[in-house]
Length: 275
Image: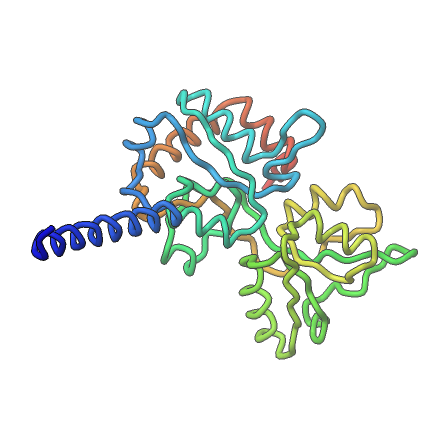
């Protein structure tokens, strides 16, 4: 083979190898072309990641329950889309999967904050929620902390990478004292509450809705001390997914007017308080 031909062949092989390497990198990261409602409708599949908790998505015996899971099923029936659900405790992994387009939406109730809105868009609010302190009652029914000022020098346990960290750090500045934060890897609200109930840890911080739903099964658990103000909670999407967000809002708005949705809200959050 002539040197010129050999050189050309080697150059082609190098180019092909580089293309294959780049393709492999895209496959590993989940990188694809933009995926909004048009692409989702064409595929017939809505890819969703959600938390694994009794309030969101939970498997008991042979059935699956959870507010977000049941709302997704209502959307699937209305749109004839196949809802492909992946449960994931880690919020960081959920956000990474959303960013690399492995998922189309994070269907777990996350706070709609100014910081979060800089990178993501949200559906219409699905619930009002706040963070609360989870602690044990003593034999007389009293608790150690009822005032946020008493949190100084305490260690609060939270789920790893939970947005709760920022609120506790701000609260530490507000009270002028150090509040220690311990992130528990692979722990959701349920595991944290069990740790408090069993005496392994003294304090945890969870969303109020989750704390009440799970804590009600433990007589010694108290979740009456607020850590944050009430916040809007919603599902999360990439900024590019404006058409999907509009569609989800329309479906949720239609579903929210049904008796089925009212029953769903009462099942997981109780009857709305009279104002």
